[in-house]
Image (cartoon, rainbow, N blue to C red; front, side, top):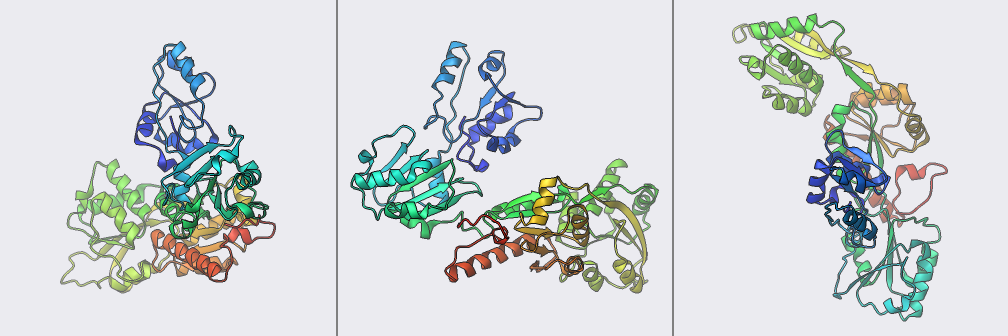
Length: 501
């Protein structure tokens, strides 16, 4: 089965289907590990003679880089299947020859309808390719790129012919240098290319300036720390990936049930029996805690009938909608306790038969909401729905990267994420971009001596990711306007490898 060129999203539908049915998977490289998420639970990652496994009745997937029929000899493995009377199928994969060029902004076949792919490991006479009028793509040649360039010139290829060398194709490690055959030696001198890489020769390379879309993403290649609970980080990480970033989720907060459940039990009973006029949710975790209690008692969203429900922000509102509850009150301005109080109606005995509000919250919540509602004439039952405790320290390499400037940005989604990250891993390096979800989080970050570079225009994780992307895009544009090569923040620390992108 072809695993494709590197980006796990380029796997074919047939490949994903078979991975989902596989009893065992044989990987071609460690970089293919992300593809295992297509597999069912309990699949075996196998080594050695997979043919014998298949002979015993197992469905075995043998992953090959790129396309298994293109410069990837599988003839011996196929012969072994035939000898063992094992049925086999060869599933094509997206080949690097086209995919890497597309991700580099180079059209495989441009004005001249010729596209030639050569394996440098097998080719000795480069003069026969000097006459290629279209695009020449060379596999396995990065170590000999300069001699290959000279051989093509000797064969009659003009030394002004555009050349691109690209490694880590279709991944966030993709790195492309554009040159000409005549300048190849000088331009590759400090590039530090390693396989897998492709050499592309031809006029199509000149179109990269207009068609490059992948390496020009606003956060391309940025290593971004997402210090959140595991459940909360998925959508944020997916959004960061869409901007070209490499998110790394480091839980700093562990959400746990309250030490004594009786308070929540009484609150749920009161909610069902009509004790409250309002229920106010200040986090998605509070919604989750109430939902779990409902399930414990065999209740569902119908128990909210007749109640008014408030949500502090979009993420909390979305969690309620997924539960089957549409909030009656959502701040139109600042999405915070202050914003919620600003729009909360005062208690009116003529309109409100009950003056009590249920607040299921974290154990470390501030008193802002309670004080505001009390001033408006409401009585509040402030109930601990869940506890937030500091997570265990991350592995040593993560801690070293945080303190040593290995991350390009850190996204703080609450004051507690600031306190807990610094507590379990230390302060981020001063080259790291510090992004915060709102003013209160910014204040906490500054109290810990951190320079706040980015603040979301509204307090949501999605807005925070978008703000960091906008910051990255402006940094890139400023570098290009100054005639410089855009650099990631981590590349500005002392001793960082200075490689142009």
